[in-house]
Length: 252
Image 1 (spheres, rainbow, N blue to C red):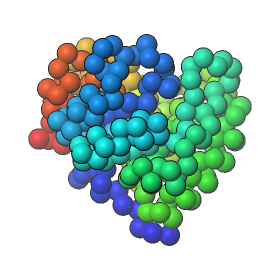
Image 2 (cartoon, helix red, strand yellow):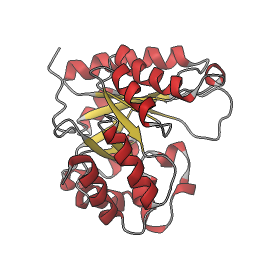
Image 3 (cartoon, rainbow, N blue to C red):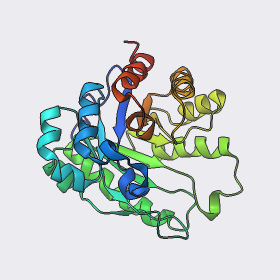
Image 4 (tube, rainbow, N blue to C red):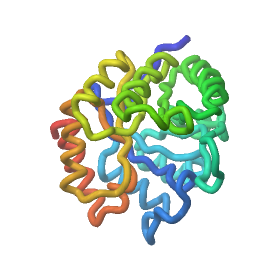
């Protein structure tokens, strides 16, 4: 197994990714005018000095020239689903590790819904992905979201820490999870995740002041960074907001 190269997406132990996989997960309702164009998002990632941009394989393929020109490290999400299908959450692999590498990805990601009745299916797929990615020397990010019948009666604090620990136990290099808004709970989650880096999802659109306050709390609690989407590319000035986020995370 090759040594996993995290240096392309992590700087001084911290990370700041621009997420744009919402088109599949949420539908085009998230987009308005300019932000429906992936080229616009790539430009934000470049000018905002993000150290990773997250796409599904279709955008990674169709906009490969723009991505390469931007020099922003590419992270490809290997599974996905629409929000049209109802019932217990299940997200199946739609891109292989080999495809992702051919498209220039320096890391890959995969979502697992712990608590879903389909959790074993996603766990099995992740195991195969993790093995192939690590043999190729690239890091794997696990999106761990507690959802489904099994997660309904559990406390949010317990589930967040469980998500972090799950990332460590299954071999993820980075675990991406939702923050419950409590610094102490996040600090315990970070500790539970051990040497697996904890990255927080940007979440729903909120005002800039509250968003930056939350980013500060995340870093203070030991989080390694964020993967932000709507809060940046739906903002009035994405580049300026990106600079402010960067200063919080990296101190400059």
